[in-house]
Image (cartoon, rainbow, N blue to C red; front, side, top):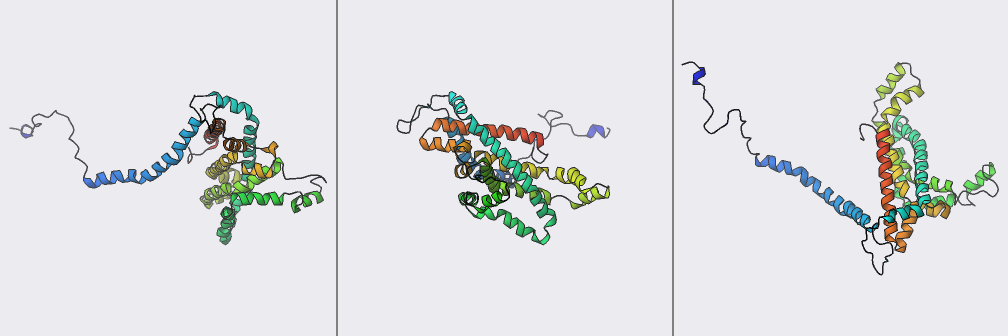
Length: 309
């Protein structure tokens, strides 16, 4: 008989060609597979309690009967017209908030990029000190920092006196209670949120790539435009998002440095919640969040990088 005839055939009760049954995972492997879920559990629970639940509660409040009150209570009437009424009544503060936040983001980028570039490439042994100075304002209350700007920009302050001396402001000119004051306060308060991501992105750039641009006869401006700026785009995108999003919902700067003419949507939301007009305030809050999410998604898709999308 040939050797082929002596090969063992398939066992009885088995289907030819069927794969072998995988062995059960050992207990150590099962324990390891559960470790990741156990590590995620605290963060997931935190997000559930302090993000998902409040968002659902806010969405529900935006659909309450607007004629309710704190004393009589609010009934769920699925009043979707709350959104239309809120936008109709507060369209100007809503648009003003987006405009102020865009200006703030632009000014923070113009001021923050050169500083982050200097810290990353030129600071040398002073790098840590300069970074400490950037984050130093965080050791002071947001409210106190804004009140300090109220003193600096006051009509009798040295800033206004100097601008009047050099004839930038007229004899009756002022800075406080103006749009310039509100945007200045926003820019100052959120500038570190722009500088730190930019610095982190610039710090990761390989200096040999910049030197290669010079070796290829590119001038400093061309090297910056074709090498440094594209490689720092993750920091630009992250910094602009971290600046724009909180600035759009801020109300402290407009309240302390502006007038009712400069009020932002955050001021109206705070006032409505304090007055007990929960449905309108919640509708404005949800609308603001939705608008920010749409703008952010559009921006990231258009200006984002592979590290962010």
